[in-house]
Image 1 (cartoon, helix red, strand yellow):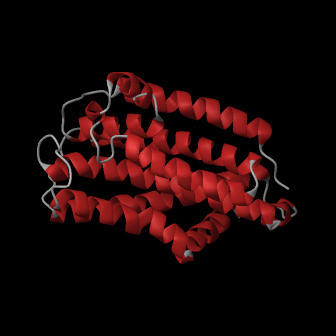
Image 2: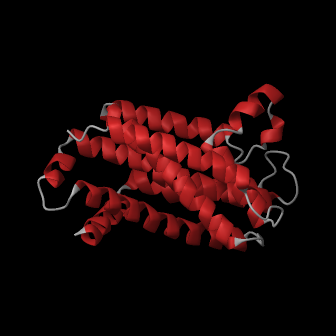
Length: 237
């Protein structure tokens, strides 16, 4: 039943035009646009800087923004309540949602890596640490998304999730180097999950960091706090 529900969740994401825009179209446009056009002064080759940041953006789009909006409206329209009346346990539903997010993320990584390679990206470093960062980032953003969807009304979740997405896109080092911000602001943005995921992926995929300790610590801390609070506050009806 878990796999069947996970398949249904994946099909719902792929068929939803807004979800497709967030998970694939915007990341591909950001990757191609900022890699090809010198809109900003970036360190090193443009695609080497932008590609890891866009991978982090894609993870955030699926695990946080898309999941928060979809779950919020599922709760509003009673979908979660009806699922709760089926033999599928609550833990099974959460597992199915997690598997669906990971499946969509795998598709995103394949597509975005293919586009980046076509643009001249030649990643190196440790794929194991990159995968660890993606899993930790998925947990952190999923916790944040479920916390928002479980406490706010669906319309408020839609507005807040999109606002947070834009703020984190601008401040998280995706296309604008964190070093460009004032020192006081930099100290804050370096604690954001998107900054940790972007910086960690950028360092391990260029081979400059053997073990992304700080990035993993920040992401795991976000995951622990948001998932714990979401578990206490989430309302299914």
